[in-house]
Length: 247
Length: 247
DNA sequence: ATGATGAACTGACATAGAGCAGGATGCCGC
DNA sequence: GCGGCATCCTGCTCTATGTCAGTTCATCAT
Image (cartoon, rainbow over all chains, first blue to last red; front, side):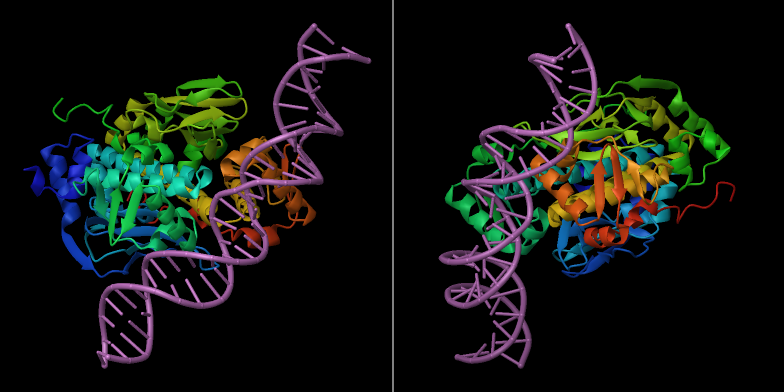
């Protein structure tokens, strides 16, 4: 029953065929379920972390602060995503992460993840794949910041978020529920909050998309995609070189 | 004899203690040494790739093109770095990569990398670590583009590059030899080539750094670091949770 | 020498987006 | 009900950066 699987299992299974043994070991990732209030800091930059999290419900974000107090959000996490995976391999974490809404997450010990590599190499590949997919999203985000205008960034960001959410069964082609504030958008898109507001107004007036009352609506998705030069292929890639586990 | 090891082995060994067995398997990564002329495209966006490369000599860069012909360079590769590692896990590559100078690189079959995970889980961890380190650099780059001014971006980029090169024994605190053109700098920093030129002039006039004749000189590294808010910790992280291989 | 090319460099002008300053609205605690 | 706070929204000004349209310089082939 697919619906009984955790979002992480569903995500990994979509790309790597996991054996029953693999699934047993993966199940260990989900022992200690915890819940956190909005704003709770799960990972702190510069701190050492012996565990990561797998998000089950709600939204989180990972970010870096600059000395002048500015913040750059690197990515948002939705159910099925790892939080702080990178930080378990480093002596100290290179970023912070906090809950954007009230969230539920499984805490996974670093040793559980690393030990699982020895027992289930296929799982190691799956985790490397998940990390690579995250990196691909960061890369796309980087291109966004480096080479697109504010309007284009907004369009691209919203389309990508919508596509990611649809992968885990949330929202549809007309839009999605979105707990972010305009300050979040400013911090993720490298803009000022003031300018985010103007961009949103502009896109609304142009009939492209609406961001209001905790909901994103795609009003003219074709023109929106054209504006963003949106090509979501990297959200949907994998499993080319792995034979089925029984093979 | 450390000097006989490949740059990759040196890099991984600095963070994960590899056993002689691990090193044997790692040696398989270096069977087919190839060399490529300046400008050769090693990885092509949208194409399927059954192998990656480990750079032994020279510089390469990975980048993405936008439909309007603009280019965003995501990262430069120096000896010891993987080229196209991410693309072997995806059905099609999400980025391109080309040689910035004449280069020498070992071609590694995807199957060799993935098979090695089953035989040497410690190596899987090492490769995951290397991928995480790359991602940390991309994240830092993203913060650069999102939240820093042109001057700050340039300062930060050059300091980071200098630090990375020193890790593989190239250059020193006074500067390094650099084959990049101002167009490369524009494409990596998300600026126009014209503005790159102005920024370089400004930094030179301020006595902070000089970029000329294929050489970067740090003229006042303390002030340069202050300008860039440069904190190179993520270049130097790892090995916290892995016991020695004999333990 | 001649022309061809590509990189470095510059000035004049245009504009996207930041910064500032403040108003409107809705929500929560009391 | 009322004050406080966060969020959303707007007009004005200013500056960092892009765009255009070149010039200079070094290198290279002929």
